Amino acid sequence: MAYTLAPLPYDYTALAPTLDEQTLHLHHDKHHQAYVNNLNAAIEKHPELFSKSVDELLLDLTAIPEDIRTPVRNNGGGVANHNQYWEIMTPGGSAAPVGKLAAKIVSTFGSIDDFKTKFNAGGVGRFGSGWVWLVSDKSGNLSIVSTANQDTPASDGLIPILGNDVWEHAYYITYQNRRPDYLAAWWTVVNWDIAEKRYEAV
Image (cartoon, rainbow, N blue to C red; front, side, top):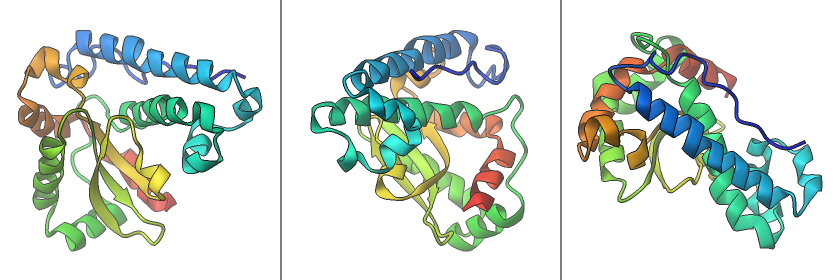
């Protein structure tokens, strides 16, 4: 069966003023939908692949037929990355990380604030379009990585804990060229409860 776009888990106005209603409509209904449409168009050439989830497709791109590998990488990554992006945000945010994730962030980066500073620097430093991530390896070790375009850390064997979209369409209506301001404001809507669940699942 073809892949579909899930609705936002909150109202389009729910993340304001951090992310405005117009941005969410554009980002979710246009950009994310386009990735879903383009992924379906690619997979239709090898319909047996519809039996796999989007995440399964991305775990081993070498197993994807060569004639559709690039569109699956680009558009499948766009689908998977945005799925986690909408989930990792919540109206009003959820204060701060707790439990095992909080302890690991402090032991790895020095403090929660130091982690945020390094994470934001990773987002600012991504040239052009892409993402910045907090990821875990299979042993629970944390690191900050940045990926270009719609590449996902999952394709490199890493587990995304939280990721922020630094494509201009994610923030330009409100923040124009001020990517650092967007990155700093984004923490006010981060859903640390989901991040904790993702880390505990590792």
